[in-house]
Image 1: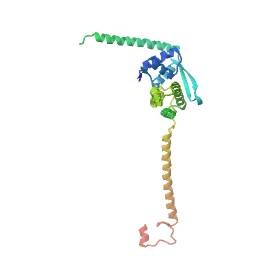
Image 2 (image 1 turned 180 degrees about the vertical axis):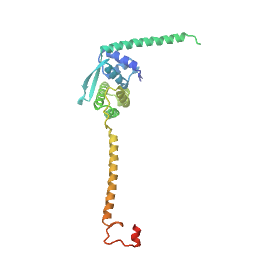
Image 3 (image 1 turned 90 degrees about the vertical axis):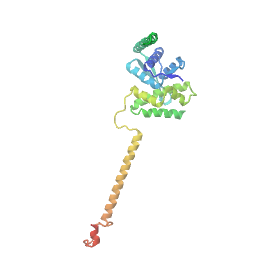
Image 4 (image 1 turned 180 degrees about the horizontal axis):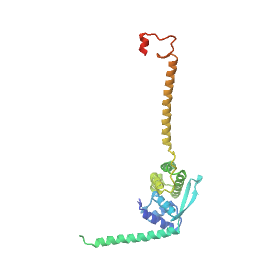
Amino acid sequence: MPHFIYDKSIIELLALYLLQKEDLYAYNIMKKIRKFSGEAIAIQAGSLYPILYKFVDQGIVTDRFETVGKRQRMTRVYYHLTPQGEEYLRHLMEERVFVQSSIDAVLENASKEAPA
Amino acid sequence: MKDELDSYFREIDKKLFTLSKKGRAACLKEHRGNVDAFLKEHPDAAFQDVEAFFGSAEGIAESFLHAERYPQAEKKLHMNSRCTHVLLAVIVAVGLVIALIAAASFVDQWQFRHGYTKESPVLTSAPDHSDEAIAIY
């Protein structure tokens, strides 16, 4: 059973990184996260939908609707990363590297410090 | 599985009652599209697999409401069907009670006018001063 991720910043980073390569709809994004993590992590649709909608409102991605199925009861909503979205993704990646290295520094230095 | 899926989507739809009709339709269409894609790749999946992958109906509905992508329904009298039924039942019950009281009153009046009650003024002569007549008043 994969570990479900609810951290918004992680979901944003993963979704945008995947959208960098190709336009995807929500199920694709969820499936690829599971696949590329070896089923270690997963996100639920309820965590992803608000983030994707926020991205559309902010111009970070655009959406494209394709009606599927009989009686047109279903829609595939493909999300596409905009240039503004690429810029935001770059910012998220830099922030992630910075935070991760800072955490590593705290852990390393804290372990070296002699107890008071 | 079809019944369970229908029930799942109905539950999401019910919980989205504060959204506009257009918004509800759009949310459901997108989610149906994603579930359909999952089922095409997992034709032997059970409903529990769908729910485990995407999340519960309640969680999905909350995410759509939280996303605030679609406007809320106009704030006019827009009750769900259960409230409508309860209100109708109350109105019918009150109407029946009023009708019963009116009918009882009409019957009472009719009896009074046609001499079926002691107090009926259908007397051809002046009331006597007997003890019985005095007892009535």
